[in-house]
Image (cartoon, rainbow, N blue to C red; front, side, top):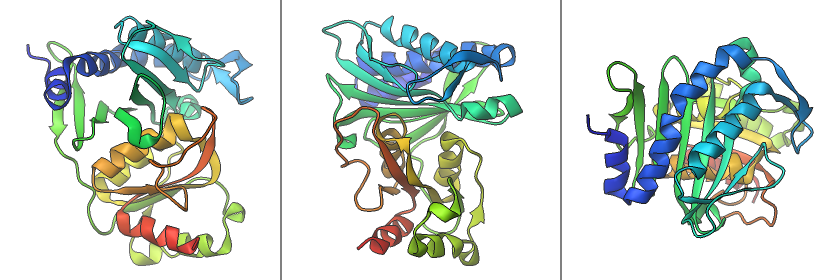
Length: 292
């Protein structure tokens, strides 16, 4: 049976990048099998941010690192769960940044989580230097949404017969008006102008939907239009913000840290945090005006 995901990426970019993305995609079956055995079980340690690790966090990170390095296409993997980069082939063409299990705190309560991956040629750079970005959403079904800079495309994992990802939406586009919004953090941490803007969204017809998993909330914005926001600088620029910005901007949306596109933000630290606003262009423009 033809591999739809591999063929789709290969035709938009090249066979090497398609092989890497396909390997990341195919890891989904094994990851989901592990959920019931590791959900809510503490690993016993903390990650580099002082956050308590779950067994599933640590296992997923190790599993994905191994699957990517086995392709011989990855020079290094940077991850939220690693204190230093995992080394692969020195002359390999790609460097990867990832959040292996976004929303892992939701696993204990059987809510949605996902995986976020950012891919660069040779070395890390700005968001605009990414050659690909993708996220996997482990919902009622597993979906993979990716971009290589030629639109945003979504695949669904089909398990009957030969398991593979099949195309469900090509060239996903954010609707121009209406939709949903999800806001992380405490209202007391918002500046007054931003707080007033966010409070006014319901009055403009937007529905509040926030799950605590960035992947899930951004996927809703992709489908319905609207806004995902985490105004406090908590989310990581490289592991979460830049790849999701790339995906949403390629779907006709926009991104900002409140001042400039997340695709243009520069930081000396791979672990840098940033305010994050992602969604429909008109809403992002309004947010940036609040800071002028």
